[in-house]
Amino acid sequence: MAQTLHTLAPGIHYLAGGVNVLVLEDGHGGALIVDSGLDADHGKKIVKALREKALEPRAILNTHSHADHFGGNAHLESKFPEIKVFAPPLEEAILRYPILEPIYLFGARPPVILQNKFLMAPASNARLAPEPGLCKIAGVSLELLEVAGHASMMYAVRVGSFLYAADALFGAEILQKHPMSFCMDSRLQKESVQMLGALEGIETVLCGHGSPTSDLAELARRNLEMLETTTRAVKVACVPPASIDTILQRVCQTFGLEMQQPANVLLNRSAVSAHLTELLERGEIEMRVNDNLLEFGVF
Ligand SMILES: [Zn+2]
Image 1 (tube, helix red, strand yellow):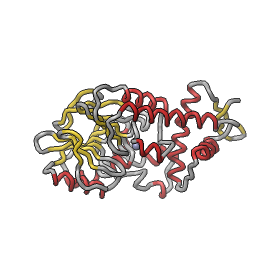
Image 2 (cartoon, protein in one colour):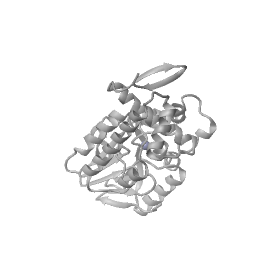
Image 3 (cartoon, protein in one colour):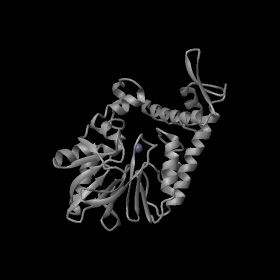
Image 4 (tube, helix red, strand yellow):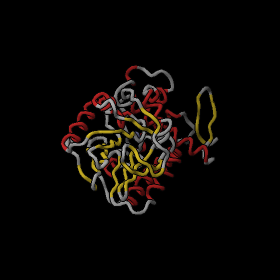
């Protein structure tokens, strides 16, 4: 992982990694950090990279509550006790009570193996971020855009002609590697992708995962295509009617996916469930209980 900040525009930098970390300068030696990476190690790398630029972290904005986007918070909060942490509604609750993520994925108290750093970061003293729109956080002027879908709630960040899409968009190389992405609400996710794709005046886009690009419209088009392909694959997998787990198995076969870890199964199971909800709402499939199985299909 790169240890130094890459500059995207004056006062706008990022630390490249499996998860990108955005750094916005306040013009007075302070910085707003947007997402903090996977773990304490990631937090340490952020501190080191900021020091190289003589920047002091003043606040963290977490775009959403997935563990790989706020895992560095606890380290930064311990090093800089004055630092303030902001997150969107609902997501902010998960930052304070991170057990909620493995609980909602598993549906009950999760086995210890699911309480790992990929699903559960250390708790963070988060507060509600400002409402979407133009605002100032820790002296940095920015625009928050509501882009729910990948998570129950998520904010993208716009500063002038720069857009940090968080996980509302995935970089082209990520889409190629992962034919299906995690999703809580596929209908909203598609709306968010379309809204971002239609933004005017964006010259540079950085996603939570992947390299920066200048072609926002093309990136949005590819993300939408991935989501529509998943919806179609889930619909096809509903014939004959089956349980969520069987539908997941069929979808994995379609995409040539081989899941190894329990966490992978649960994450993909959530994504399939999200697309099932969308298909149910569109009236394209139905849900029934049959022989004690919750089934989805055309009956
Ligand atoms: Zn995410």
